[in-house]
Amino acid sequence: MVLSTASVYPASTATAFEIAARLGYDGVEVMVWTDPISQDVDALRRLSDFHRMPILAVHAPCLLIAQRVWSADPWVKLQRARAAAETLGASTVVVHPPFRWQRGYARDFVAGIWRMADETDVRFAVENMYPWRYRDREMQAYAPDWDVTNDDYRHLTVDFSHAATSRTEPFALMARMAERMVHVHLGDSTGSAKDEHLVPGRGNLPCAELLASLAASDYDGHVVVEVTTRRAMSRAEREADLAEALAFTRLHYATPAPVGGGPA
Figure (cartoon, rainbow, N blue to C red):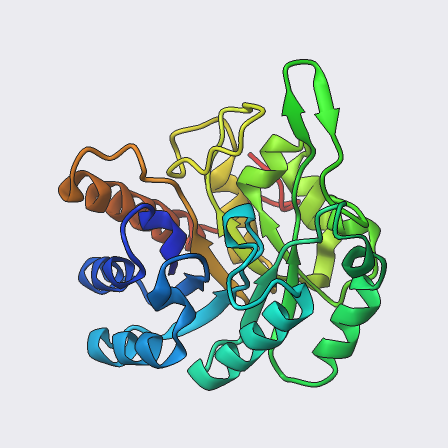
């Protein structure tokens, strides 16, 4: 089981490695953002070596707060993410679809991802997103589409919290992704219009059944705990949340799915 370093925000990337090692995670996914350590490949390698915690995926700096991280050019960001993954031994680069206002990038995105994927053994796994909603208004913030199953990508990341925010049934989403699904972000949701990333088991998503279905399939990618602990009042509370997430994931990822691969 893998811990996303985003799960300790607003604590540091270094804190994520320490917690992951202490709790017994199998590795980390590094979210590259404004934390300088997340951007420094040499520092990340030292953390990985010190904590004996392999870096299994790199999340390219796609968030709004990371628009200037590594470069203002989104293709340079992806090139640096690929180089970081190759240097650190990570198998996957997670990337979001472009924002709609990144018109040139969005126009060439699908073909460009294929070109980059052809140049490396690292998998570029494009992540499902969601429309932005405010009250009764909806904004299509991503292009070519927030629903990545509508485009011809070689590899995909399924994020269950994003699926809930987009009001997409998660089993149907996984079925549409099929063999292209190579990476999983696990988080729960109450069905809010906000992207919640709750500890699995605390929302309304069938997280246990989704994990059991994955375990019974031929899925061979990583399962990454990507939850929010920003409301934790102490380090101990944050660690308790991440320990609970790990225990839940280990329990249900080892449970055979019911016949048919859906919820019981």
